[in-house]
Length: 245
Length: 245
DNA sequence: CGCAAATTTGAGAGTCGTCAAACATAGTGG
DNA sequence: CCACTATGTTTGACGACTCTCAAATTTGCG
Image (tube, rainbow over all chains, first blue to last red; front, side, top):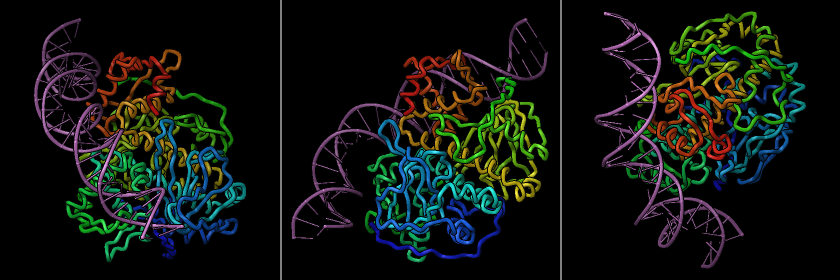
């Protein structure tokens, strides 16, 4: 456990439009942090309850469960996964402050969510939300923008998984993580990984051993340095970006 | 080219809610066909223009282009792809009647879309749409539901790409195609593939040769029969489902 | 400090990507 | 109508990589 208590940061909210923004950051995880502040500007916050999760490894919801709430990450990180018939587990996404869980689900959860670190989540009763939605076009646009954001994130992962070469996949994964400023310090180039090798493997569709070997190769290539299993230092961002294509 | 001219079929539209429906079909492509009829019930149709694309291989839009329209597939099939730096192409999705393109894009297209077959698309000017959206909560909910649907589709593909075994990937892909009733006749178990081996390979993150080898193995295992490269017959649906896990 | 869990490394079998060539198909023009 | 051609598909061979199983090592926590 990293024991981080990431604080949220505020930015000037961009205009509330779907198409707005000129261009997303290359490989960026998008405008997640700004969304949080927006959530707090909307009426959503009035019906939301902030729920603290004191440590990592806590289940937020499980696949099959009936849906009662929509969750918005305020602090910390989540793992969204689905258990497949063969016993395999696919990690569909990692969620960061500002991300919304459960938009693609209907009636019952099809995915599970667990905390990776201590976390704070906004919990919004679905019934209230539905009532609010029918009268608040702004709120709907907001959610639509969130859904579009999640969709872009999913597309990034599809591209990631499309890489045949595992070293490239891991490189692209690390690069994506570098967009999470709570876990990446751009000045010192220090990157904290809140998840295990198993999580990474299940996210990238491979095994923990192969992930480790990819890390080893990246280290040998002078791309990264492993200060500890969950604490990396990016030695060469250009090399990382070259690899992740 | 298959030369198909698929007609659309109407169903009773389900209630217009995000969470509605009890449970999505296993591995299903979701409620796509019903959406079409809904599109036609909304005011969306009033500002939409039906554009015919007489054959496959026509570009609808290209990445980098400014966004002017939102597209809804009325008939035919589309390929959504992105060209990566290494010269690789990732096919992000195939789109079928009722599917909406461009929900995850902002300002400029980040993906390209081409027809796989002759197609008919509804083209909706983005400016008009935006004006309409600000006053029509129902329409927004509609789009939100569409975005959620696309997200689920993306998650299915993530799970698909997570399969380490290529035969399973192809099996899961075929199973997904069987949900497209314009291309799959459940009675005769005939399945038409509107896309090439290259398209399938770029969708599954592999090469055309490997896709072919997977087809060969499936045929040897009595799962499918290749009547022609783009015309399959499902010999054993249970085997197909067992493989695709 | 000690222990359980996670990570890393090693060895062998199988699979995939690459390159190359044979084959089939569809569309074209004579 | 048929031959021709370009495109798409299938098969083969080989090297590289990944998965599996196993063991050694390190880490993090009580």
